[in-house]
Amino acid sequence: MAVGLKKKRRIQLIIIGFVLLAVSTALIGYAAKDGIEFFRSPSQVAENTPPETETFRIGGLVEEGSLVRNGENASFVVTDGGASVPVTFTGILPDLFSEGTGMIGTGKLINGTFEAREILAKHDENYLPKEVADALKEQGVFKENAQ
Image 1 (cartoon, one colour):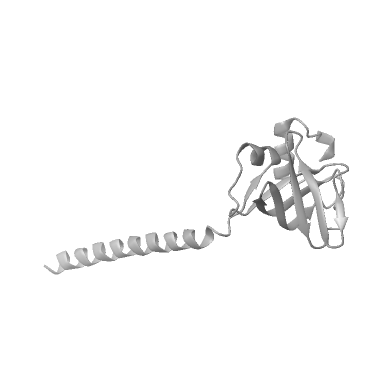
Image 2 (spheres, one colour; image 1 turned 180 degrees about the vertical axis):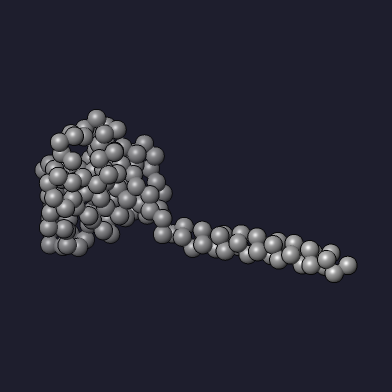
């Protein structure tokens, strides 16, 4: 009889362990859902407009002639060759940020304009973020020697 009781106790502990694992996984997933930011190219944004409540990253090239600076406010257009999305940003732009260069912004699309809370620019003339390069390759705009 003692052997049956030990076996029953082990099974109970295993079941409790699986339940605790499932609960902790669910809690971690729930807590992380607000921290996940998906990358989208301007073409993907144009095809499937994300809701205004969703924070995501957008990347591409800063369109030539589109950069307008007004103190700490800046507006420009990001493109991947297939579509363009207007972007606004309040803050200090990175030193390497300029027209015709690659960028990634984090923010929300509100009334058709991407309102960025963070802007990242390429760090030298030979680098283009992987997501941006992949999006430009899909549009046939990417030049291999640019990376």
